[in-house]
Length: 118
Image 1 (cartoon, rainbow, N blue to C red):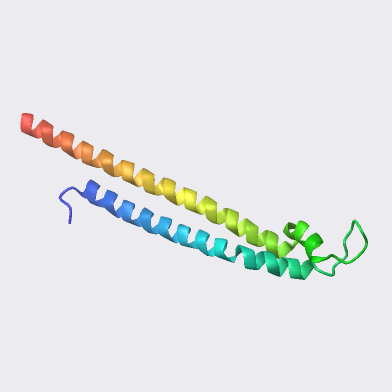
Image 2: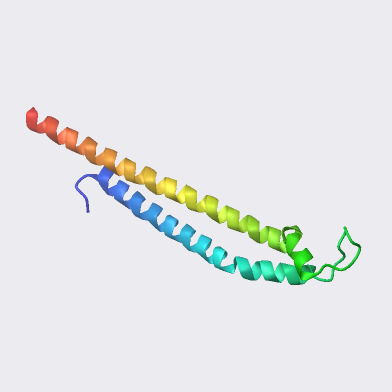
């Protein structure tokens, strides 16, 4: 497809990195949209459980204060953090692929200039 295989493989790498970034961003967005729902579910799970400070059942407001102690919600938050990490890594991979493409094009151009001047 490309006269220079180095350039062609770089374009392939850029396309693949772009796809990984799109998938990472979609996952991050999906988790973000679920955050309120998952938090509400955790609060409901905590309501009525014993409040260690008062020895009374948790109300909705006291449950909200400790919602991150809910194991299921804590796991969800960990998934949210991981999705951000995955997006940042995908962005870095795409940037690296683009820079590699620029380098491949510059290298090809330099060889062409050398061959014309020779």
